[in-house]
Length: 554
Image (cartoon, rainbow, N blue to C red):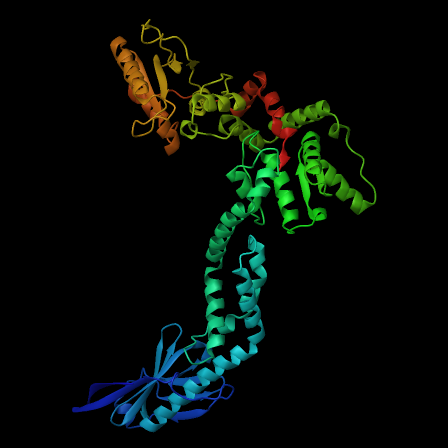
């Protein structure tokens, strides 16, 4: 309780009175399941001293408190209560209900004794409401508290779906969790449970991430003997993490020959060893029959458990056979790779001819999506980089095999916009020397009488680690000086422009700036570009990609 003096000017008379304000919820003894009723109103004289925007009468029962403010009635239910206070002056008292929204609703000008009585009744009812809600939800509160405690034990990886039952229980506790519960309203045990559930609901995903991170690190250490011996070679740290992480859906992205099959085999063995899945509930799938057979053989040698290994086709057949009572008749192309390729070629030709949207997407794939783009900075050596270029056959729409993805993007833009180019021709002047061999610009543009050179450097003139920066930058300056010496046009592009998304969008402006005249563009039609792809055999290359007939599904 605290004291403060207040004064009001009423009819030329200065009235000074004391105000005693106290939160009543923690100081009034109440019965948990009972509600008090009270009804009172401000006197006519008090109306002279208190504003009309404050309540002048109130009535409370088990449903809440109804307050008359300026002729309008407002009902506040107990689940809206955050606190109840009252204050007294020389003659009158004021009761204030603080809501969970931060609103303060006052009933002023009441006789002091009645104000105190109303405050006590509201506080009693507020506590009674809280305790009754807690009593009604005691069982789900205990269940949620138990599940949260079990969650924190950290015996296994907690997948997202494992929280859904707990969050469903917590959702049913919303009438209790949203109450402004104050110390003393409930027993310490129940109060702790409510706080624990509320905190978990608000932060469950963060808690899950922290717990899983700790579990993964501990599990990798504890299972070291298993990971060292599960395959012919010990698993790498990345492979071990892929095995231990047991999320609802796990995606492992890895290059060819990096050990994806080892991860799949180890994952299945881990699930069985830890009793997380019985063998009969594990299905291992592969795209091709060869990959399926390899996985089945490796798993049989390692553990011998009855794990099912199927291709996608075999799984589909088994599902249809189970539903229909007999396997369906297979199309001849399902078992004849050449006939399948012919069918796919005819299908693509038909779609290109009849579906403009498909033709546009198909062409866009050849422009820059035929392989995953990787910048030079992602490689540790020239060997790794050239292996990537060879595996993905970075070839332009015109048919030139180029030295980088970025050069391919530039070439395709030139080609599709009708700008003639030659890839890596001999420079028109002999500039070979003991230090430099004859210069070959990346692109010669006959129609513009100039060259275009793409340089592998970032905005800070840095180069990938496997490129000698000093030597490379010296070569850039030599090429620029060579063009200046012979008066030939050179347009430069850089790797950092690819990262910024401006490699080709700014190329037109660069060409016009260097040549000093507007660039004549003659965009090629989709049909003409696709015909060129067919002539160069690129569509057949597309059908022969390994993704159509090989690999396995993680």
